Length: 345
Image 1: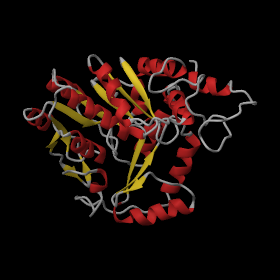
Image 2: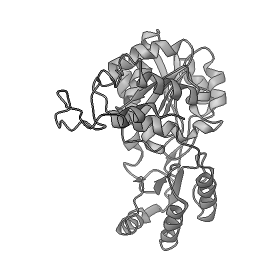
Image 3: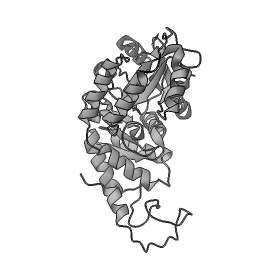
Image 4: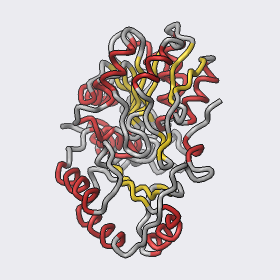
């Protein structure tokens, strides 16, 4: 599939003389919105073509490229439902801080859904909890997948929401767009944090919508998306969404989980290794060998994969894990672990 933004950048003349921003004056890929490079606020050329392709791939009526991360997408979704007449939204207790900050900014009341915590990991809200929260809310927002690779019951969430909008913070799930459990198959509005699990530059993301929410979302993103977008990030987002599925690494990841007795979760890309009290020692040993996990919550070391992960990378990680002693995982969350991911009011 054609890469509209990258192809446009490659055609730039070597004689390009910059009397425009940015101030480094080197042009190249890092340009501003010029006559030939389109305008993200009102796309009519390569950016329009890229967004249309991305929407088709993600199953959306409209998708919008973001260079401000998933946070700007979450804000855009919340503003959209506020303008659409919503006043309260059901959200998980351990939602990302951007959800609670967005609710505060938009004047939306967050109706927090309780999440049980088992061995330090918040479980997804139960179907019963979603149903009860929706009695007091005009919309439902879920995180899918969460930081540990668990998904909510999206089929039941869609059924329970009915005519009420279903929003999904899919910041950690853009690699799932090939799969039946992808957020866009169920949500009215959703965010893909493309840079987190697909080969895009940091801060690259997409926010999408279906039906009546699609045009309303277009009116919202302009409030939260920068007016000086990075073309390298834009090009990387288009590239990442169009990146082919890597079934080999998906299968290898699931086999790796079984071989090393990792936590059973719903997302192939998230390896949850239980180390308990030995987390710090294990992380230090790994990093001395220049192997870096995503995070350490005091119970588990988290390793995030993507379609770009190589099987030899997994083999190297596996060889290291065999040398590391594991400890007993605490039944309750270690002090300060979970609140990193929550900002409940």
